[in-house]
Image (cartoon, one colour):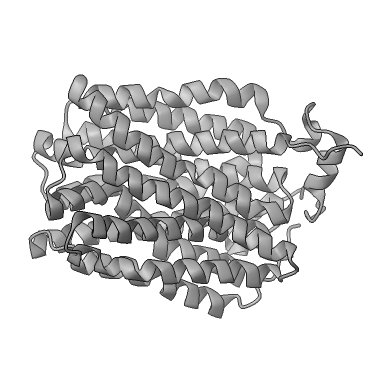
Length: 422
């Protein structure tokens, strides 16, 4: 009997490494937050504004990059995004002013907006429906691996050579990835390493669609409740994840006195646990679907478990010891990744392949817009309360349950959309 073949997992590995590099380049500012504040003399509000420049650009980029990827395809679109963000990441180490740093952050956000629309579209091209959440969880776990690598590598580079060198060295990683991506990525039916058996397996459960002559417009997508479920989920929860990336080292420093040289261990623990959530959450909904559960029930059950696991993180600032706080945040980070793997997959559940990039782009814009608001709100809360993190973590703990309630009200059955332009 001919084996199905597993080349699709090679594509998943490429997406994993791209996501890892993407998050290293964005998270380095969070690791170096106290160092950069001392270097440039930023207040809490100014630090919040600086991080929000990246998020604002990320939002703007999402409005266009998803449609760009739908138009030119995953291979070229992803490569272009990596070139832009890698140049911007390295440029952080060459700037001489606060304006230059803010500009580099802005361009970085524009480029990094390409990662998830491209990766989700590639997943829809390469995986049958019952494997999409699992494969999404695997490549999305690169964000957690990135946090671990950043926590180990960046302090070492900074303490050895300086913070500028840390940006330049990590910014070069994207160009190494391109050496593998460009020759290896093709669509399944065009790829010489994909057997007929694996191609049939990949197409099992996928919609059979012809490419439309007219692209789907934003206004048309916004007519559907299914679009708004994805937008709401991203708007209300993406900012929480970025709070962990950009503010967690500062929180550990302010609450428990954890400096740059001792930051690695708690960060490693948090994101190792988060990896389990990313892969496990994606696996669970796929397992339920294979057992015969309706797609909507399987996805929402996974989302509900994640939302409930996040609620206790509200108590993290009140934890009596560092490791109690780390435990609470670890579970919340794992549950966010669990949530994210399933939320991303709902876009490919509800929309045809030719519209997925645009839908994910709109959702990314909504998530980044929520992130801008949350970052600026965080800075102002901390400035007004003398770095009291309790109100901020209360928002983090309640955001997901609220988002899931709205999602369920908007699209109880998460039915697939029949686009007019299709």
